[in-house]
Length: 504
Image (tube, rainbow, N blue to C red):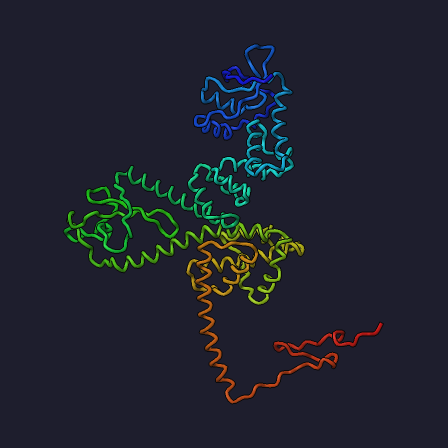
């Protein structure tokens, strides 16, 4: 007979067969954080120790027991089983139900989570249910996501891979809800996650910067609306001078009355402090000689727009490189780009320059081996194919990233557009920043093509004025061995192509 009892955790004894690894600090810390809020949801399973009346051996629930001890709980709920066999039957009952086909995705995930509470690790659950460990891990993650995410998984709008990608936001239901409302999934979801992650990192850096200023005795005020455009009541300290005409030093005046700090961001999203005077006239300051507030504001506006684009594009680049690694990072998948890369090697070899800096990591992922002479000297066709494709991808990425940075030297907008089109055809979904760049490059390429074609047509008209079109040279197909002129090269025609079929 099974009974539920509240038992002092001090009277519970560990089972020596329970692996110590299953009560790791991280797992216990998670339980310690949740128990004060929701309590112990799943009772421990224990059996009486006949040799020591009043004490019990833990069969299931070692992590909950350790968490209860560290929290100092007076009692914990326990399911008291008469013997070990009954205790293990409980775990088997839940595990068996995971095989039922009529459970929804979230119900299956909850089964896995229940087994985890019964001290089953992910590998054991995976082996018992014949599922990959990654599948089990992602399913357990789903149980920690808001109800909206679980409902989306049940109707097929959210895969378990998507749920795993959302794991970092399990403590932020608002962000998860916002991502789900955007209807994001697959690579589009990863773009959205990268954007949200970047926003969170930026906010954390802004909070740290503000805390440092406050500790230094500097007053921090909100950044004025539309700063630094339009009519502003605050003025940069570096643009002011005192009554004697001496330009102010922002670091020297930042803690004085009438001065404060606003926090802005540079092109990389790094916080930058701007010391301002809240009312220059009232404090006896005037604009310093040689300042041009209006021109500076226009430059700052353009820089802000470019900064926002660069930040979004940088986040998208990480997702795009992840896609490239997965889509073309094997001998089989690299063959899909082999002809494209080979054609570029013949027609435009400069695009296949050796990857540098951050591109080296992407190159290694796609090629599967470093670009080392010792490797290439013995590499077979599959390895060389991956290396060729890797160099072509990195060359295309270098061109794309340089264009995104608004560099004009050594770039090719047309090939960048073709490259993005190729990725989309391969299953990639462009982010807003990538789409914005593609539209801009498409417009630029179209404009350049129209201008060039007009000039060429005009030159052609001048060169051929008064001349008749020459008769095309057509090879005589009946003359085996006739030589065909192609691009200035003489190529003999294969005689076998012109022979009459032989009757059987």
